[in-house]
Image (spheres, rainbow, N blue to C red):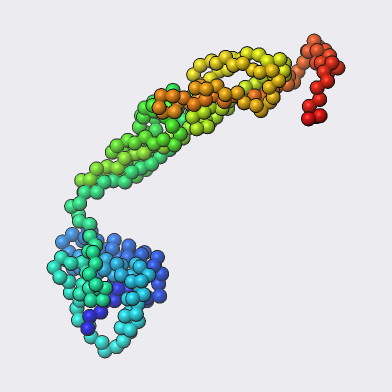
Length: 294
């Protein structure tokens, strides 16, 4: 009769194993008998086909259950003779497989001559909001598979977006069998700073006001990311309120810009001269404003 011990083929002594164990055993055996490391060895090529056939059956719960019923019946029985399970020409699956599991789509064995593109390499680079807005030439150092540092000069376009990737073609891992090299993918991370915070296409910044500016209304000049902007401060504005200046934020990648969001911070002077103290005292006596009454 025909019977093939798939567990033995994968180097396993029992069928009481998990699918993960089967996968690890398959990788170990496939690496050992792969045609690329056994060029011209016909015997090892047949073993490699057996390994793929065994994994095809045992790698799924249904296939493993079906095979285990036969394995439990045949393995360990003495005085049992077996016929060799042959393959038709160029077939990966044996007569045993086809007898019990039917005709299936053939698995393809990679050939030495097949060109294979190298893996892409990914890295990140942090840049400031100002540099991202204006664009700049950035030096980027990437460690190669040999452990050496390789430096690239990359032109970052004005208004590059946060998390956008720049692709350097052919600068990844080398290809195999004449295949093209992989690419280097550089992910851009835009850092907020003490002045600006990026919120989508908007820029948020603090607008510091004196108590009298907030109370009386005024015009102030605000330094934006690329220009000064004149802003009207309405009377009685409170700390924490925001003023939106349209079209003065970050670039949106379509020729437009987001908004500049000014968050007001009313600042109290820590040190007063005599004149200032007198004026504050007069205000304290004259004003009936009580913020704790609200």
